[in-house]
Image (cartoon, rainbow, N blue to C red; front, side, top):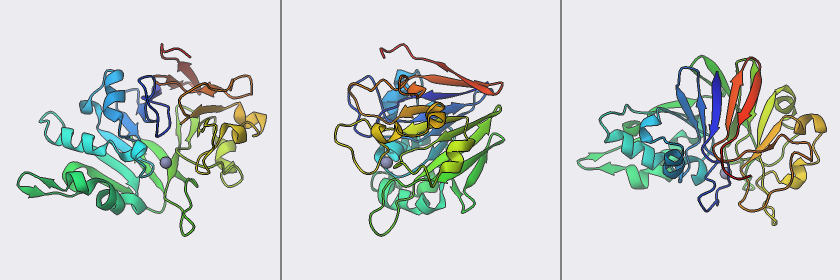
Length: 268
Ligand SMILES: [Zn+2]
């Protein structure tokens, strides 16, 4: 069996010790782990689940917000100076590969004692080309371009993932506005959807808000788990046709064409 373990399921500004950034371990039946997004609170969320930097061997980055990429300095530096660690593999779209170093990481990581460094000093970098897919452990991960932020000139590169494992087609949106029409094929094809869901009283235009998602067709809501939400009270998503809100520590076990959830012990 394979599983998705949510180290956190909250938004960028999640505070408190009940949740962390929406970073996910995809774990194969042989125990190989792909970290899907690496936020700035990763060291805490790893620790909470009994992991450490030594468990980070493969990373996928969806976009450059710090709740998705801000933990790379921690991972890069700890693995580099720990003789038990090998250089982690870093998978990311070609259009953020230069930027992640030049604008996100080089300030803190560009110099180490006696050396000027590059992204390759810390990671085996695998830029994903315009075909937008990469293979990892015999699984094809397709990058799905979402509309997260349009600054008026361009759309900030942001890519969710679509993949099939053990007969189950999974769509993880990463951060996205609701683009149901544009991404309809993915919504239809997926067996399970993990969807960005803002719950703030004051919606931003850059995420899908619960009040928008609740208007989706019942058939789509019925295969949708919600994550990326704000701290505080949550709507009763199950009553409104969703599978529910993902909680920190929830594990989704994928085997024999179906997904079963093992909830963490935290209050819900
Ligand atoms: Zn974002």
